[in-house]
Length: 144
Image 1 (cartoon, rainbow, N blue to C red):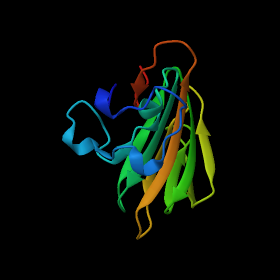
Image 2 (cartoon, helix red, strand yellow):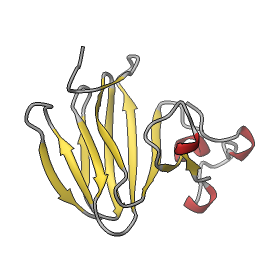
Image 3 (cartoon, helix red, strand yellow):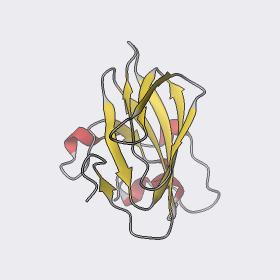
């Protein structure tokens, strides 16, 4: 899924981009994407085809809902803000509150989600890589 205009990308020459040069995309304006937070599609600006890398910008209370992927591994790093993580099985999830400097991850089919719970906005770096299969997102409460 493309988030940037082709003319905004800097794929020729060295693959270096500054955060301020990556456009902030308001996902609430897109009908085909959930959640409705803002992102910076770093991967698109660098011309990456196999690795996803986004900066997710959250206002207090915004979240990435509890979900899982069939074929994608995801690594997250909290840069700013305070987040409540929901991890593990749908029947007995684990909750943990984390702040800047925290990594968390989800393997394929491993349910996960997070909400910005502090009074300040939050920023999370999300890096994802497919296992080579087609990836689908599913609700862990009804995985069929």
